[in-house]
Image 1: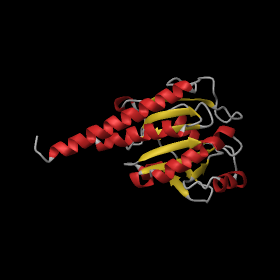
Image 2: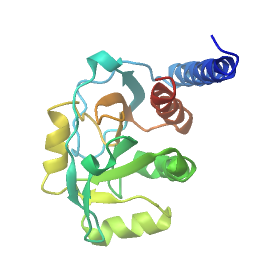
Image 3: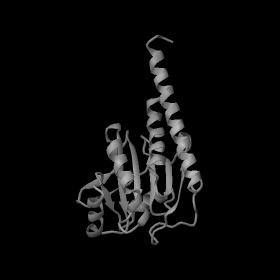
Length: 208
């Protein structure tokens, strides 16, 4: 090994260790709050709100399904297609304005969108309930910097259901750089948990 290679290897090792520690902390937090790595199979999206329990599931790179093909029109009338973000990490979040856990998690999602924008992380909301009259005030209230698809025709949800079950509202899905499902949170996404999951997917690229 050359002298120049040693610092780079140590840096990758330190980053991997930091991600592992963060994820371990998130796991402990989820366990304390009733979360974990199993999901509630009886939850059904868009039948009222079903908060789930904040549990999450991860998939090893070789076991991931996809790529996810989600496209639609946001509430400003602009076309959005996750295929345009291949090579970056993408976070999908289902929500609607009157969903209490959606409102509770919104500040964390906004913070993550802003903090990770320069790291090549994109967030996209998927709203299968609201028209613009309900969705836009929500986005303005929480100063949401990322788009949301108006999915009342359920096309985006249908595309996801064939790859990763969307069993509750909210549900948050993390896609790797190939557009495949790396992780899913059922119910309210705790900021620390989502950050750890995103960091782990980002680190995969850095370690390559």
